[in-house]
Image (cartoon, rainbow, N blue to C red; front, side):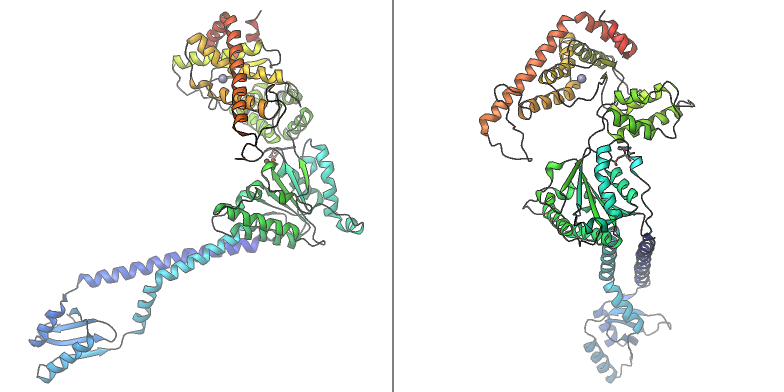
Length: 598
Ligand code: ADP
Ligand code: ZN
């Protein structure tokens, strides 16, 4: 309803733009053709030649247009209508010359015509055309920018809502309970105002992408039956100075007009990151952030607008955003736990047909750490895979392959792999699997494969067990060993090492660094947090501490690599056997793998 006139306006601007463009092309083309035609039958005489011909009495008639330096010349003996042109630099002097000649008895007819109005306008228009075009283009571009400012609006004045309610948000029970208060406020603001209660204006939702932040914001609007306007922080970042700020202003203008409503700002870190004093894009960013602060402070108590913002990088946000009256309430939306995952899977399995052997609880158990979006994606992929395979319902294999597709990437059957690379991958993956088998804290192997998936040449998949809130130092150290098991096997079995271990090494280094700088797990350094709070923050402990961190990280990694090599060396027979089997079958299941150890 609100959208309509704006859509039409936009169409109108597009049509005007097109018409202007076509007209100017036609205009330029006509002038061009006319000029080139002129040139075609151009029989121009040079000015000096013309003077000679005038004085020699060869000229019969001269036609001049006032204000123009081009004259038409009819020579004696020429047919009617046939004429030459000449450029006369000084028309006054030329007229005097002809008058003199006429006095001498040299009969020349001199015709002086006023310039045609049409030609004059045409001339002026033509010389101004580029300027006019540019001005029109600029106006149109700016108008269009203005049109883009409206934000997406779901619903409208009639309380038509997003269609999403809390029922569609699976799990997140405590968060929903907390946000129910906001729903009440949107429904009956008077009740709260009478009591003198202050309801938060701004609520910040922290959480990884795909955890359902947008969904829950829409559900609040749906529950309260109010419109939902949303915009993403990255949309505010503009090339032209001031546009980001004006977008923020317009967004809130609109919100106030249709209040009560929900404003949702996704990726608020894109505008709300700490203000800096530098120039260019940064200062543009500051203007946008300042405008947002102004808007948050500028609500009247009668305006029922709740602003929800989402980010997964809370540490990046400018502290000013979090002050009272602004985003003073923060809610963390964590990745779902076991029950949450089961609930999400249930919600998204509606309308899908599953075979009897599928147990969503089991899938939930195998997907620790997955977000709601990933779980929804898995179910959708399983339906696609089942369709392609011609199954009439989603089978267990379809679902399992969907999990793999979403986690490790698509199988790349077509990639041509040399025997040498295959052997290397086989030993690498066998190394991971065997080393993990001897580490008490590490998960059991679920599948080992040398079929390339995504960017990986092969993979070792582990069973997941229930979500844990804490990870012990022993577990982290053993994780390092498992990660380096691939490299250790390559080195020992093939006496060479490859780039295939680069990701393992990266992950291992990151874990070791966290152990030392975040979790205080280094005996030498002790429980001190050494992680920079901001990017590029100067270390406050000086160079010596940096050296110490480096040597502690190196020690952790060196130790882990040594242990991995020891385990491999003690079980060379199993390593060869597993690698052989992988080369034969490409893929080994958990049961098959365990048989190597009996
Ligand atoms: P975010 O805004 O946190 O990045 P979204 O709200 O856009 O995540 O979630 C993406 C999709 O994932 C949703 O549209 C929904 O299909 C699914 N999803 C995420 N969390 C849940 C949940 N708790 N219940 C049901 N579906 C969910
Ligand atoms: Zn590896």
